[in-house]
Length: 442
Image (cartoon, rainbow, N blue to C red; front, side, top):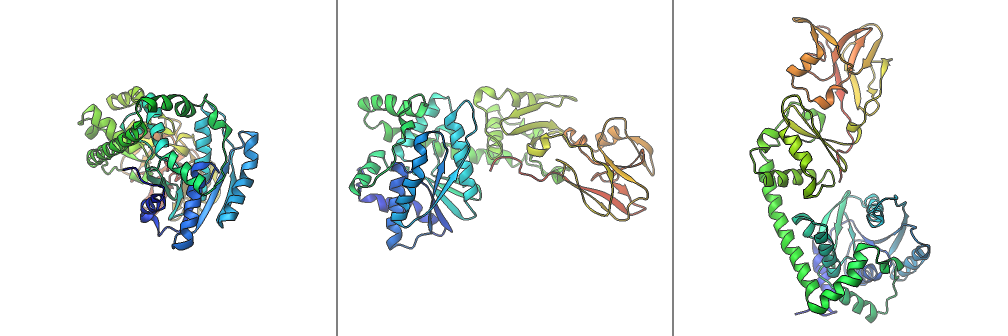
């Protein structure tokens, strides 16, 4: 039986029950129908119930002249409801998809606003879920994409919640009319050059004429696919457990997997496991663009293949695949003279270097590999550095950024490598803290 309008506050509270102890509830308030109803519902409920503090956030993209009047409208609505209000102005980067660029700018602003144990509430509803499913189906999405918008997910330091996903657009409009709410009609929502608008205004109405329950059916399919994705995630965790082995280079802080164990899985389970592992780190390619993984997996000998993805790269080296992003993809700048070895030395795009113990006499320099370096070892004489790195299985991607300590033209030490990183007799060691920035998406 279709829920009545009176059920809306109750259903909203039920969906938000696990989050009643949050520090704050932020409402993504565009001023449109959906967010206006959500804000009104929460403001009314807060008058009689103990709820977290409500705060409305309006993101101003500046993409059309009409939008300049929207913050004032939103402010007046919030003033009338007694809800704190904030406007965040963002710059939308130009690109092939204006929809996507605006969304990225909007969610970037939300991430900045949300703190630990705070939640962002958005007004997406069941019709939006159906449109999302249809849109992604036409783009050839897999199970993860077709599972639709999740009801909750992590967002920066907090969480994003969609408490109206079981509510129809018609129910929201009925509530707004009953309570004489006013809302903004965004002119861009009628522009059918945007794919979602085309689906909403030209495709779904035709489908609903033939299949009146199409929206409900598609939302139900999204729920089934979401459950299927959960099972795939559980399988990925099982498959990843034996390949997340301890490496001698875990001190790098770089995510990695043991390739030899991964290849024992079927191709489909490999893709599922690697996709699950990469999901928090980067946007994933579609199924037609996984040849990079095959090249990486099947590389032999001295080959050092790289699979370039949207937000970083996968490298294969020393029997593992390594996820590199941020500073790891920028070549470190030359260092030169180390004026005061008693103090840590910040290396441009390459972490921090520290010398413990009494530093060797004379002027010291920090350099990076250029080839042909030789290091004197007390019991082995002068040895080629490349061979020493090979003996220790040092991954290729860090060989060019390992800090080398020189005294004049003599190589004294290689940071962090046991037996090569100092002088035991003189009691000093060269310690390197690699780049520590985020390794991917939150």
